[in-house]
Length: 334
Picture (cartoon, rainbow, N blue to C red):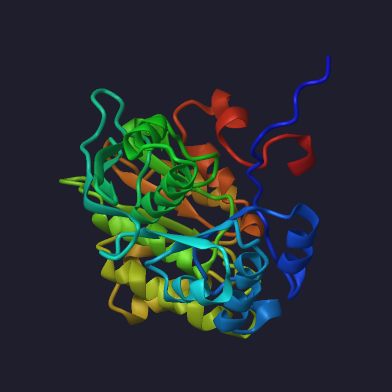
């Protein structure tokens, strides 16, 4: 017996070149369109952030009048897309005027006996409804924003806020997307190796800044950010400046372009004695093994081409779970 066709399909539409989104919208004809952020990604082909915004706006511009556009109120370029659609608009974010909004965000302590972060908690509101959102496996304000977009879709489908929040309590990020992995020696590895862009890399560094560490050290393992075109050098240097301002104890850069992360960090005052460069991801992981102590925190972030999941594999406590927990495992990636 053939399985019934699903009532709701959730599809991610991506673009590498102008016109990609419009073509995909024609193909799938969505009724609900969610736009998360507009960052300086794929600039090799789009050249400017405004061009990226125009591309993403094609999604909401082509929604039917009875459709729903779900827009990030915290991102100016996304919020402005409400002028491009005839669909009903629901906004989400930390902004006070967002239809679905979060407040009182707090990082929780380490989970007892696990040696990893305890996640986050916040208050969420929509209209006259308020609920507590517990995210024990999530780290990062930017991921809370992503969760808010899901809550907004739930509200659009007439779920109560309490129902939607409760359904997300067990959510765990996918492999390579800010996933907390128990590391060797009782360390915490934050695996964000699926891909990278300036916006996402700065968000990962911000988590390192925000996480309470006590007496423990913070390491940042950062690789090349690809497809940035002429903006590449400046973007890598700016990321290095953010690392220097974050209170990071040691910076490990992987890849040729990542040398500019190192240069940016040192130019912003980070000691050269605490900055290291590697051409190979696995070698960086082996180097780190000898430097870590219990309680240390290590976010790992880079574009796909740098293969920083190899760093995570060197640092994770249970390497037998690599195929289950990490991206790009299997013979085709060897």
